[in-house]
Length: 231
Length: 270
Image (tube, rainbow over all chains, first blue to last red; front, side, top):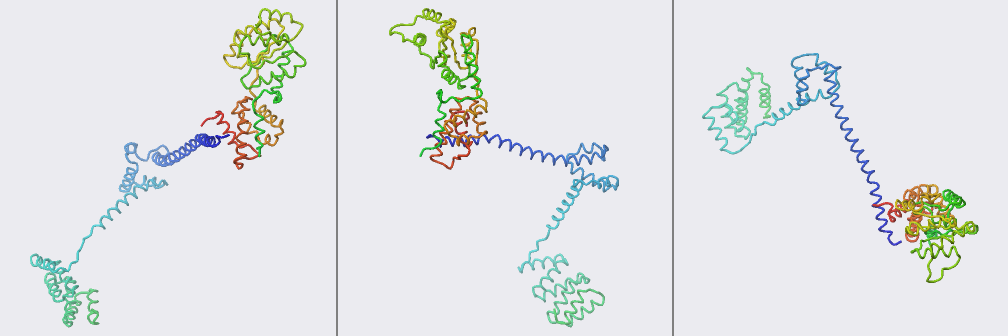
């Protein structure tokens, strides 16, 4: 017996060949099971939907609505929305009795959509670029002299105060006050600038006068800070 | 050191040696049937069966058993020519060799046979009779008509040989004995008895019923094929026993080895 090794190899090949049908059958069964499970699940969804539509042989909604549906979920959702808007209680109750999740899906979709809209709104914001460039302030000053826009004046007063240029912040706050003497922010910047420039008494006199005709908390806080030297 | 499987392998070397004869239920039946037919005043008996069903060994067995009771001759392989066949027959009938450079006169032979009627009862067992040409077969038919010689004609069972049987012997054959392939039980007994005959009971015991089922499936119950398969099985066992003993289990025959043998002999294919 000299050919034992080739014979062994041949036997291994034979074994593989012999097992092949079993592997194929196993694969077939697996695929069949998978397909069955998928079809079964799909049928549950559609059966549930159809059962809902055909409740005891009576359609809740007109047949034409169902047959013309290109997308079950969307149209169902529309029906639901219509029902809510028109306040027709009977279909609402019937739908509410069902335990099928599909009923809620369109609502969720709507919510999702509204959330998307909200998100978009949130995303819209102004890109305020802070700059220390002198020319930028000059441009705003130039624009103010042309337009006398109170927002420009307030912007300049606020900015100069923040930068510690209290002469200019006092001057621009005065401009704001000239345009609108009821705008509290302009007055407060004017008073704070006076304090910073060492004219504390003027500042106290101004704010006390203002508090006589206003009950502003911010003004009260400012008064407290000035009196206690905490500004 | 010799493998224990070497002896087992040699048990299944195909032969028609009478010592290798295994008495099985089916072979005993066939034997009795043939013996019974030979008692009858029949001219020709046809022993029929596919190759490897045990025709030759049955003829041998019957010749061996009856040689002291009857004038029985076994012609194993057919003579290549008609001349040689009749020379052989002449010797059987006359107990003498034919003188050199002489031929048998068939008419004289017929007359001689007619004279033997009721004096001698000669039985000639013709093995592999499908190899005789139609001329010889016709003369055999005429000789059987003398009723001095009884022929047991052993034929392979194929469609062509069926025709030979019909053409030459139909009217003269009084009895047909057909040997069939062994059943699983017969084949199991055959294998086990063969091994036990050589005291290889451990090996015989290692061949279980399921193994025999497989062997029977591969060989379809044919004794010659069974011998071939068993020989190959033990040849592979011998190799493993000598070179890779881990592949051998003395208590049972690995299915792998049976299948490898079947592959080697072409019973199964990759």
